[in-house]
Length: 357
Image 1 (tube, rainbow, N blue to C red):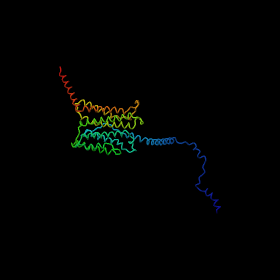
Image 2: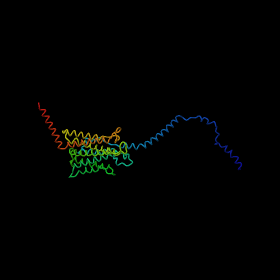
Image 3: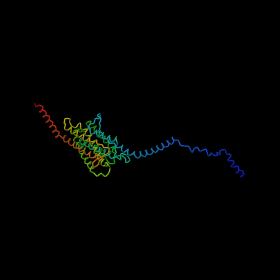
Image 4: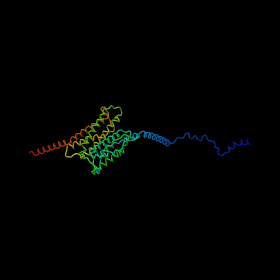
């Protein structure tokens, strides 16, 4: 039985219907002369190029996105403060302060309180601008508080706003600035209703001009220190140079806006000398406030390629300081009397000359 089964085994396999037929060796000869389609080759090359481009673009985007975000997050709004005519403010300086606070909070945001990973934490100009703005507003509000006493003490809302406008290390500024704006608004509301003492523009202007001149002197000294410092790094300017420049610019902007808000109401239109001096003050502070280079330069050489922006700012501040002190002298009662007397003498002499045949 075993031998018979062994003999039948190959025959059983041969009798299966699924045994493949032998392959003719000449069947695939034509494949040696086959060529791929040019359309498919072009498609494959295009697909490989697209994938390569996408990979390179992704790498460039990842590497360049953060620096681009740093540049785009720096927004210094030095435009003039435009107070709508329908808004009735009792004290113009309070309106300027509130609009400046709102502009910084709703614009770029407070850069000094950003986390380490945020693009604004890499900036230098914007934090210096905002810090200088807050400091200048705090000092100006404090001045108005002293000119608006209640029972022998500065107004409580203004005093609170002045404290809130000062930066505290490690404390977020948004809640402080919001509370300061609310305190300023409360004071102006009370002043408009006669419930708080409202200082007149002619009372505020001489005092604020003294303060503005002091700002110019302080900032010129800081800029001079940076101009004469040894440049150890940071071409064309170091971080300290940029911070000194934008702090001076911020205070100049506050000075210009506050002066412009009070200028039209602080002196009479009949005094030509004061009008001319006030126009000079406004122009000088405006030049310093609007100076906005793309890159701050503090080159100590002959400045063949790049100017020294710190020196230019210091010069504008010197002009603003001198113009402010000149206007202060003219607004003193004795100086005003002399101007009126000189005007009267000139008019009298003109009348006499006219009467002569």
